[in-house]
Image (cartoon, rainbow over all chains, first blue to last red; front, top):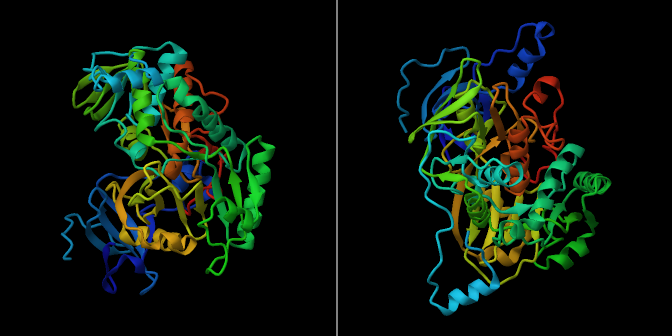
Length: 97
Length: 416
């Protein structure tokens, strides 16, 4: 089980969270103007990175808030967590746990 | 190829098991082939076999990063069934079951395909309605499936506890043609038969890049063992499909998750069929060695680590202990994970890609083993004809753009 550092509550076990998929995917401002290809890419295309992946988590059994994380998908180690609206840290710091 | 038969087994047995030949060559990569298959699992080896056997392409190489069958082919719970809801899926998975039924004879290799039946339990009124809908849909598509009362389910699998549990068994759908096969033998059997037809199986050969010519067509792969050219490249790389296809500039609607399984210590034959429960999420069968083979769920997050969280397998074991109290004191022997490539509609992609000369078989998610011969056969067809077979024609990448999803999420045995 992963230990996840919620930016609001601190480190908690994975069971308190739900994974929210890839982070920083912006919903098209006006879907009616999207081509089918653009809309399909928004809905379905995912980077599926093997390496450092920016993803959303929600502390559903805690503060209830969404936040973002950088995690290495080859080791599952969290490199950083950060609040929604912030840019991913340029220099990921090592998780303290 | 040294053919296997009862007589050859007896003869070798009487002469100290001497004289067996290696089952396939340790091939060195050549500079060029007619076709390259990336991924030496059952799907990739099978595609090479069918290319050679049915389409006359014998200058074929299978490139495998590790050893053949070391990925998901050797990491699944070996369950085979075709009781999928939609017409497209029923045709696809039953094509595979039909190939399974003669596979040992075709390959001259005992893949231990055992049609012991697959029982899918219903625990709620909703389960009953959905399961019965599946039974009817399957039968309308010519796929066998039947409804069992709780007592009939218990009669077929005497260890099953149907009442006095948190989610009593209200019935079950039962596909008699479903069952299991020995997964390693599937990889080895396809490898041996493909090798006999001239296919080069190249292990320890990781693909680092896919090269495209001036017209944009795929023309070569760059590997840890050098550049290998081919006008047709088929990718059958399971959990790493996104990674490989991105080398050619093709984005896929796929995410990779760890999926776990575990086996118990071996016991005498006590479990006559495969039992699955979607609602309380467990599936179980008994291997011919006697181990109880148990499938758990995927982890919640994408990963390439080939291991899952302990709480995921614990959840599956709790369900098993509830349904089969007899098994509570069994010790677990091994657990492992595989990386499964999951599409948004939980149906696979077997298709041409936007890159000419590049073909893909991916997106099998948590259920690829059952499709091994079918997927291999259809990928080979698609590569040989540069066009899909009617069975895999609906399973394109473009279906996500065009809205023609084949939404089997509800039909899968596991809650994704």
